[in-house]
Image (cartoon, rainbow, N blue to C red; front, top):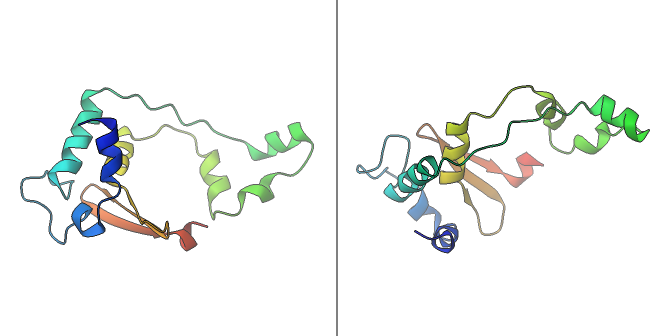
Length: 126
């Protein structure tokens, strides 16, 4: 499957990407065989994810000479998330990118992790 074909999959209708019942041929973490195939291709490609870097907004603010925390509060919890030490769980990142579906009007996203699906509205994310 080419990169262009994968991009086109993002335009399939929601019921195609997240059917009411998972395809029994797909692994337990996936709704469709295509999602599982994309995940396996990501694993086989040995794609590397960059280590999560910690941002200390207080130090950064001191460097620029202004309190910049206010610019990061538009998304509840963002300042705290940026300050969390550690690395990404690569399996979760791959599962997210494999399954994420963005509504055509960008009003919500839908994704699955470990076989459980989640929906996040744009209003909630902002």
